[in-house]
Amino acid sequence: MTELKSSPYKVLKSELPTYYFNLLNHFQKRIHSRTGNAILLAICKSFYDKENIEIFARERMIEYLPFAQKEYKQQLLDLLYILVSEVPDIFNERIATQIQPLAETEPRKVLTLIAIFAQKFDEVHDPLPMVDILFRKADYFRAVECADDYLTLLVWLMTRYPSFKKQRSQHCWTYVCDMLTLTNVAILNTCYYALCAIADVDRDLVAECGYPVSAVSRDIRRRPVKAAALSLILRFPPTSETRKMEETLKSLVIAAAEDDRAALILMGLAQDTGNAMHLLQNPDWMTRGLPTAINTMLLLCIILLHTDLRQIVVETPKTVDLLNGLLLSNSVGMTEVICIILRRLPLTPDFVQSLSESGFLGSYFSSVLENEDADTLMSALRVLDALSRVCYVREMSEMVDTVVRLIKEPNTLSSAAASVSVDLAKHSKCASMFKQKKLPKFFKQPDLDPKLKKYGNRFLSVIASKKKK
Image (cartoon, rainbow, N blue to C red; front, side):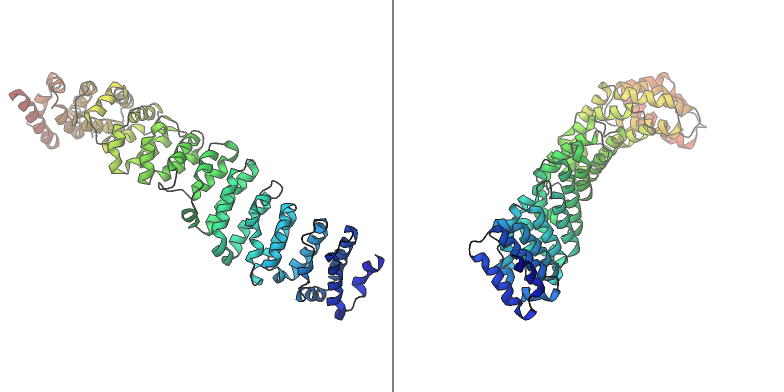
């Protein structure tokens, strides 16, 4: 044993091939593990000279190493670290197959070995057999003690080597997605950030390999991993064609109740007609803060950009609740926004009646009259105009006084109020109130402002036609 320990420093270079062969040949028979480890250590010591390593590699001595004998795995891995650092090209498919089982009991050490090898990826003739151990033994690398390093190595390979990306990007995406079934929060967070990094390098992967919808839908509702899951969906939003997209949207609505980022993602997804349709078919978001009324309003406005969906908005009962919620938020400029929303909708008699019966219209006009500024009054006039073209509701009669006052008192809203009076007059109750307020007489004045006179003549024609009936 003493002679063995000193042999690496005594052997001549010309004798090295025979020296290595004789030492490794001992593993063909049964020897004490202490002797076997001493042999491997002696070989390691002989590597003090790089030329010795090259001789070992050239003679293919790596093929005689005791890979299958578990009692030597620790010393064997130490030897392999030296070889992979200096002569990585000898780690061909045959050697990779021999190393692969070591990952089952020494995943961290094998991962380190592959990480060292990966740094020479472009220098090796055929590097894939070694790095493919990352996928073939993935279950062992996913263990808590090395999962983060495993994910980091996959991302590093993707970002560093175009040839690896070209040949193994789908493997990386798929294997990391599979890890989203793990329960460790720290690993899950790393998985999501790894997916972001992988997709940054190859943006076609999401479409080619599929989106981890079930995992994302689950995790955006879990506080410890919500931020990471949202980061993936924010950077790489799924399309409406994505499998189980409806499930993802429902989860986002729940998450948006307390997270602005989820609300922003919903707004982005709603630009897709299919996603907007999903949201209308599951309208719970209409009565939730996302997390604010402003966000809810913005989401509705984005959905309204899809003109073919506006009829569905009108037919959705919760739309009235949404409008009530917006009004109750007392947000600055909300009356004007509500006006814009209502004017974009294809109003129906049933919908207008619902607005009235729910108390929304009464509250809306009361809110306007409390402020009495030009912008809110103009919004109220436009809402009145839109409603009066559809059907009569009692709030129209309640606004007659305001309309008449705006017409008779010289101001910037007189013409707008006069225009509204024309459609209001088509409803008998409003026409009767206009007569009581002597509006017909006002419009008959010879010195009336030309703009008012134009609307006045139309108003008088409507009143006259009602008399004939």
